[in-house]
Image 1 (tube, rainbow, N blue to C red):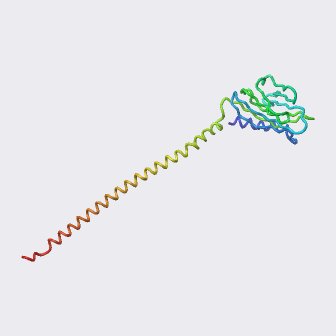
Image 2 (image 1 turned 135 degrees about the vertical axis):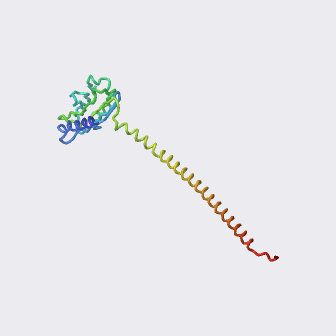
Image 3 (image 1 turned 120 degrees about the horizontal axis):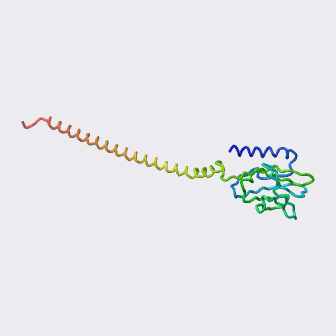
Length: 205
């Protein structure tokens, strides 16, 4: 992760000397991470009369990737032969690089050929054999979002089941207590009645 942040900072530093003047070339994305063998798209847009446009790699080494001009066959560097396609016109050109290799990691900038040469802000391309942990955590987050409601529902069900069992047990205990109390009351009434009967004098003696 620290290496990736360093590459992003390097991309910003590479832009500053070339793009402090009024910007006439736009470029997207600012940076992109791709797996080895995947593809990336870099879009170069400009305003004003345009003779042609380059896509150049400025870091870790300086080299031309392509030169594109309307009505002419594009020039493609030998490293990218058979791995580059184009869509759009040269003033709004999308360059797709396919079958990426680890060596393709670098900073790529559009260079518009007008009355003078105007650079775009650059795109940092990072090619890796596996996605960083921050990207993998997106899938983990989706799994958590799915699992959390399920766990809560199961938890509430178990709590409700436990409360129901406690309620039934408590009710049974109360019924037993009430039955025992009623039995004692009946016994006391019978004892009291027996005492009263025994204390009545015999009128016939």
